[in-house]
Each structure stands twice: as C-alpha cells, then as structure tokens.
Amino acid sequence: MATNKGLTIYGHILSPFSSFVRATAEYCNIEFTYYTVNLARGEHKRDWFLKINPKGQIPAIKDDDHCLAESIEIARYLIKSREVDTPLYPYSDPAKIKEIDGLFEEFKDLEPATMEINMKLWAAPYFFGTPRPSEEKIQTLMDDLYEQYQKLDDHLSKSETKYLTSDETPTLIDFWVFMLIYKLTDNNGLSTVDNHPNLAKWFRSMNEIAILSTLRGQGRRMLRFVNFIFGYVMPVVNCIRCKRRRQG
Ligand SMILES: N[C@@H](CCC(=O)N[C@@H](CS)C(=O)NCC(=O)O)C(=O)O
Image 1 (tube, protein in one colour):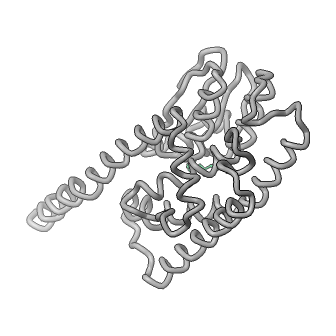
Image 2: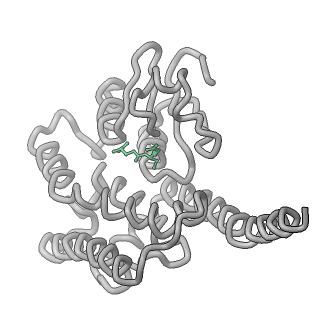
C-alpha cells in the first residue's frame, strides 16, 4: 500500500479507466505515484483500499488526505486542483466545458457496452472460468457496442473535425473514448473500428499522441502476456491437476 504524501493514483494497466486517469495526469505534467492494485489477489476489496474507494473499484486517487473515485471525476479534479491551463479541459472556458461534458453524457453508454464485452467475452472466461455467452448473446453485445461506434462515427462525420470537439486539440472526451475502445481493438480483435471510417481515422489521429500510444503499447504487451498465460499455460496446468486428482 502506498502511503506517501502527494498524489497517488491506484490503478491497473489493463483497466481502461485507470489508463484514462494516468494519461490525463501525464499529459498535464502532474506529478504522481502510480500504485498497481493487484486485482487478481483481490487487493481492491481489502480494508485499506476500501477506505480510499468504498466501491472497491479502480481507479481511485489519494491526494494527501483527499480520496476520490470515478475516472472522469478524478480527471476533472486533477486539472482543476492543479489549475492546469490546458485545452484538454479548459475550465476557464465554460462553453467548451459544457460541450465536453455534453459529449460525456451523450456517449455514456459506451462504458457499459465496452465493459460487458471485456467482462463477458474475455475477463470472465479467462480469469473465472465462466462459460462464454451463447452466440446469440454475443451478437447482442456486439450490436450494442457497434451502435455506440456508429454514434461516434456520426458525430465525427457531422463535426468534420479531427478530434471530437475540434481540429486543433484533443479534449478529455477524446482521451476517455480512446482508452475505452483501444483494448477491445487490440485484444484478439474483440472489436474493430475499421467498419466506421470516421472513427477509424480519429483512432489513428489519437494514436499519434505520444502518451496514448505509449500506454497503448504497454497495455498490448500486458494483454499478450495475460492471453498467453490464461489461453495456453493455465489450461495445461489445469489439465495436469485434473488428471492427478483422478489418479489419486
Ligand atoms: N465508472 C468507473 C468504472 C470503474 C471500473 O469499472 N473499474 C473496474 C476495472 S476496469 C474495477 O475496478 N472492477 C473491479 C470491481 O468492480 O470489483 C470509473 O469510471 O472509474
């Protein structure tokens, strides 16, 4: 458990919400200590962590004695509390803030749509041995996700901007959407943006932002490692254990 003063971000590289907070802090040159919460060992449900976030979820932060959860709230708090003058979330420009916050509201269903796919098609079968959903259920999950991609694509087609709110610079909503969808595109093709040309173009522009592509690269390497362990090593280990049990 990190106990130092200053800002600590509690997260995990495979958590899109944690990566969003981390990317925001790095982009704004905010100093922080990063503590990787061991989800596999249930560290996020331990007493010390529940004091930081009673919901037992990452990301969360401790800023001296101030604790906060919910990634979008954290990102806003970091920028405001440090008085960072940034086009990412220009709190001195109420019209822009209204526009960005409006898009968070408009695209809020992207969170459950991506999390359902992550959990039901990847995390639950891998980590908890839960059976994959039926083909019909998978189709429904994919339809829900692609409906959200279509909304984003339509928005970009209408705005004709490079990023979601402007040509010049990405804002918090761009960071959030990118972090939510990149893991699905990188993880054994759980989804693709290729069928949505405006979204695909936006995705490529976002990937040119150094901080995002670095975090994406780290996430991809971790995904490959996890997929290897749970896709190849664990089934063999379980098979050997099962045989021994039967013999014994
Ligand atoms: N709305 C939350 C979502 C956070 C979330 O779902 N975190 C996941 C990891 S990606 C988590 O901690 N799951 C563990 C649990 O719910 O027990 C946010 O934006 O921070």
